[in-house]
Every structure is written in structure tokens, then in C-alpha cells.
Image 1 (cartoon, one colour):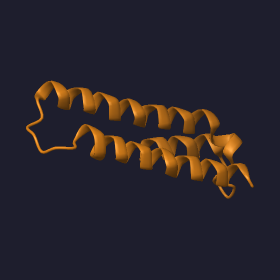
Image 2 (cartoon, one colour):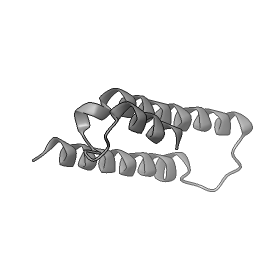
Image 3 (spheres, one colour):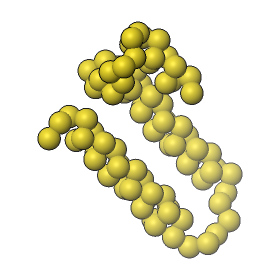
Length: 82
């Protein structure tokens, strides 16, 4: 199995785990969310997205997701700005 397929499967599993935790555990019952809880959840999700963006920036060339891109640095920055 290629590294790309393994990473795509791992990404899908991580997303499903995050959905289960967010919808199944943290918000199991209907309740009013406090400002503090909402702030912590926002901090968590922003941190997760920044970790993902940093990993794409660091490992972009090794993953070779976009072989048709001529300039790796430019395409990395284009991905992160989107």
C-alpha cells in the first residue's frame, strides 16, 4: 500500500474520531453551551487546524500529492492560504 493511501485512510479515521468525540461525547445532550466552553472548543479546533496546516507545510514535498505542480514552495503557500 502506498504512503498516500495510508495517509488518506489515517486522515479519514481521525476525522471520524473527531466527529464522534464532538457530537457523541461532548454534545450528547441538548444544553446551553457557556461562553467558556465555546471558547475552549474553538481553541481546540483552531489548534487542530493549525497542526494540520503545519504538517502539510513541513511534509508537502515528501508526500508528493501534487506531482503536476512545478514549484513546490509556491503550491505549498497556495494550499495554506486557501
